[in-house]
Length: 180
Image (tube, rainbow, N blue to C red; front, top):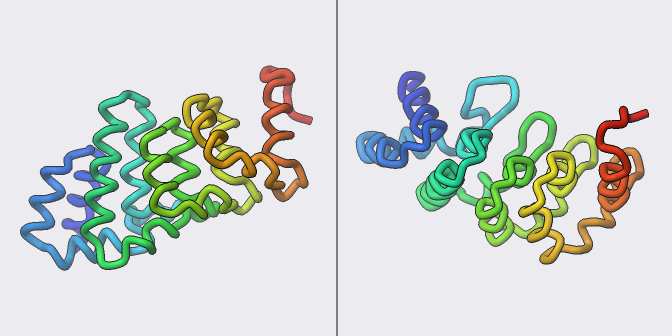
């Protein structure tokens, strides 16, 4: 099963949907089980299958974004409990929406919010919502879309008591000034 786990992980992180479908057709129950387990990656960050779809988007090119969304949708349709996938978090409490926003993956953010709108308001261990990650990485496209659909997210406070709006204003004051 470990070898199959690596093959599945590599198919997802390499954005090779056809390879993933082939593995699934050869071992449907084992692949389905791998896509559902909580620590798919066997690493300390607790990345599940949907997170592995987002990781290649560090390249920030349109092809990576389209392929990753295609694989996310395929995984969602081919597991026993797709809602559980949308509730998974990293060890820091981030959701897949936090990561999609951080990487400016607009279409993934839209799809995730369509499937589970409550994810917009879910906080990581520091009390930050996905919009904080979007602001911290200056992801203008995702910010504009999310703000137009969920303006109340700007009022959520993190563990330090700062609203998302205050974090936005602070990030624009002087992005080169060190944080005190």
